[in-house]
Image 1 (cartoon, rainbow, N blue to C red):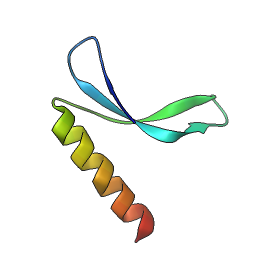
Image 2 (image 1 turned 60 degrees about the horizontal axis):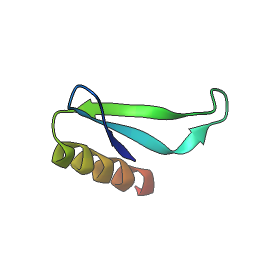
Image 3 (image 1 turned 180 degrees about the vertical axis):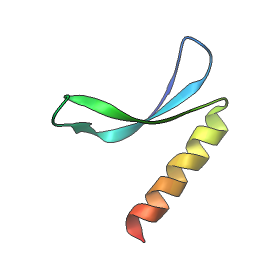
Length: 49
């Protein structure tokens, strides 16, 4: 899940909620939405590897 921050950057959050904190885990902050989407694809690839 990608969200735009007030700073204008984009943050990648995990799809599932962390049971301990009941919030989504921060998976990185990126300058462009394209970079965040690329990293999300990379994460999905390695989850299956």
